[in-house]
Length: 141
Length: 295
Figure: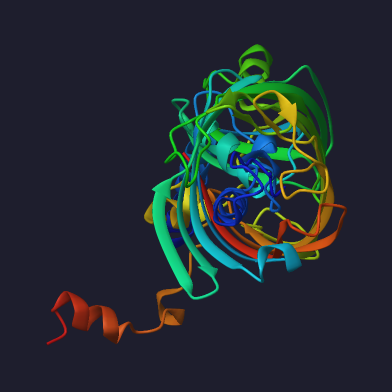
């Protein structure tokens, strides 16, 4: 019984941690017309990354789609995006929001945090013994 | 493309070669075989730098006693996006010209005439992965060059229209430019009309995705230039002289790698036809390599 409570308690904590990590970020998929070249990608990404809260930008030229990962509450309003892309020489058509950011998760967050989000509890017996790590950190010698 | 902006009397053989050497050394900046300078994309508050190296080999007809001229020109361009529609550019050439006239060998290193121009976008239509743009431009060429070597000392004015139809698969560009050549030292080069066309076709990658970081384009460009007869002391020089006007056609196949912040490109320009005088010095070929950076 005690063991059951510890496992369920641990799982609950794990899920609540996951929820907290994802709640802080949103993905904005923006349709932008006029993107034709790698330069268009670079100049758009540079402008978007200057906005406080924007963490990552990905551009699909074929779809004319710019995906932005940003902290919740970041000002990426249609009005602001229209102005931003007009200055860059493109045409903003609209955007949709996704509650969780699926864009390059590992690159967006700090490596440790990204692993926490997708962490699946494993039996310690299944973990390989990391001799290299021990050697690097000096406690194996 | 090879602007015949000469100012010496055609009766002077050496002078003819000198001035045609300039024409070869400093081809019309605005009609670059690889992506015209006039169509360079630039966003608001951004800077573009383009450095070209151009090697040109030219030789004379029977009237020039088989003169040989080759030149290596460094062409430096800087541009700034004042707004999303308005941009300004400056170009400065530096030329090393080697002229061989019989047993005489003359070498000169000198600045060429600087060019300033401004472009304003009047039409733009964007759709998914494509854009169409139309912009008039106006500019002037100032005599920063060495008079008698790379300049005739005149101020020249030009204007025209540049159009771009771009997509993720190919780009089509074109420009029409008219140049009013000024007068200096009792000489006036003939006015010219230049028409350029450019097709860039994406060869690699075949499929685009979010990881795409660069394109390789195969490029083919064409140029037609008409130039009026030059004048000396207000009198037209004969059409059959080396200063006479005419029309020339050239073609430039090339290759371009476009990354996110820089572009490396090269092209070979080959003359197709012209109706200039037999006395005129003609380009045999021209090779250019260019690096472009966006900040």
